[in-house]
Length: 259
Image (cartoon, rainbow, N blue to C red; front, side, top):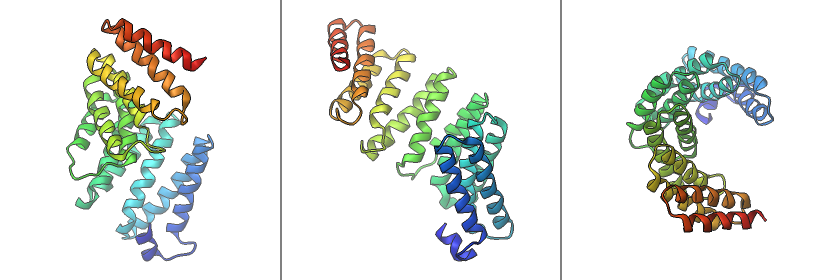
């Protein structure tokens, strides 16, 4: 956006109005008003498209970002076809320059989420696989969150192998980013354990459910209920492979935490 301002100028120009609309759309979304978020993000997309159409290619990354935001808001409104179309446009913009590899990973993963949401699971899996082929992309919270959501969507659709690939990618990113505030490493462990369990890989699931217990056990003040839930899930998985004494101990620890 800084480069965009250099081209369009400061003040009340189209770039600034687009930025203001995007910010207002996110605030509306966070306040539980997705309809307003769709309208405001649509205004931003219209302004940025006009800039790109006038020859300001520097506006393309901002347009890509606005389209991805709009795509997410549209999906929440169950406007699945429109959500897919917005994400596809964002992918096209991200492909336009070789230096936009991180943006392309985000756009492809977002497109995969939208396609799965629209019931086009095979197409979503194809977009997800392409995202995995793009190298030299550093771990970042946005693709990690998208990969987490995509893994869950693929798992619910019964595509367990594809879901596990995305979940492993998300866990790897969260590990690299660390377990600080806003980085849900503990939840990533739990989610991955659940996917492994659903796929029948119980021993592997136990490994990750144990990591979730260790993670939340080291942070009891952050979200106290998380440790109890992690222990309960760990107990279920231990019981599934006949490790009954350990399962009972984990379940008892969870009950003690719940009082």
